[in-house]
Length: 405
Image 1 (cartoon, one colour):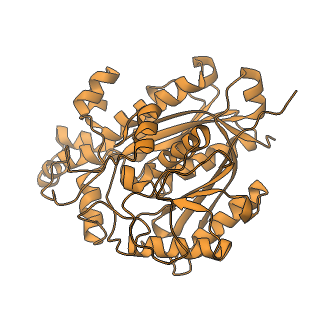
Image 2: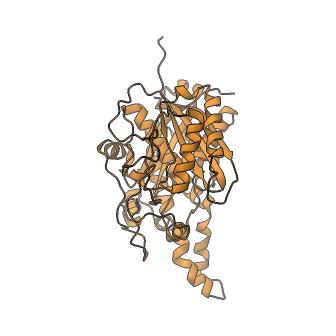
Image 3: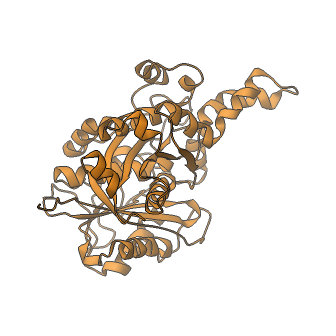
């Protein structure tokens, strides 16, 4: 049984740009990717979003793919991010054949479904449009992404709303620790759709201005989209391949408080348990955590309860914390892996992401990162991803320090 799980590759696409370099540059410069809606055909132009700048046609040409992938935005973004992750880890076709591919998504091919559903609904007979609805299935998106990366030993999908990608990472780590595989390509992809936009608008939690996580005047979410994957490897695999290590997945946990379909309990029970259990797995105490990449959606409920959970653990001496959703928008099912890559970039490049848009404290003793912070001594980072229904996940990434000799 493997004891340690290392990260040896990463890939990302979001409103901040394509790839790790573009993402890093935007984070360091404090440049948000949130703006007016460029691609979704919707009447709700009043809501700013974090859309990937490329159209489906542009991504299709970049990848040299055709039907049906050219009409599936979740798949297109997933292929781009997964390719970067695999290439950065230097994995060969032979190595991928023994690896697992685990992807998180909730809407899957909903963008294609939206284009065909009305015709199917209005028809009494099966039409060509009816056949397009099969691509709505979340597992179909995972299969298509995997098919364009390589041949895998195991392929599966996690779908737990906004903790989907984080749970894909946890599942992959468990497979490695159980000896089922030595390598796992894990993460998630989620396209922004009218289904998304209208659904969150119905919940009345979308902000008509750029979101302001952990600000007293916060009003809600800016939705986003994107994809990110990381390569997890056992210690034996890392040594055998001579792979470079980006960090260690030292601890993780998934909990469920089942308090409400969309809201979290006032004392943040699920979030509290997820963070505590992740630290227990990592054999870390609260004082060992140097930074928290918070779920931080910018809604009144989430930020209040997440902060309450943090203060149950750290009382009034909180670690440095921030939400990066003011950079990318809330990328829902993909947020866990997108923010995991951001955490790994922070560990590697010595910075902490700022909490954009913040002006007024919710509490005087709870001020997020708003200025440039020296990250040279940061060793352990918590990454929180909390889903509807109280499905809460915490990952802990630690800096890898090569032992002498």
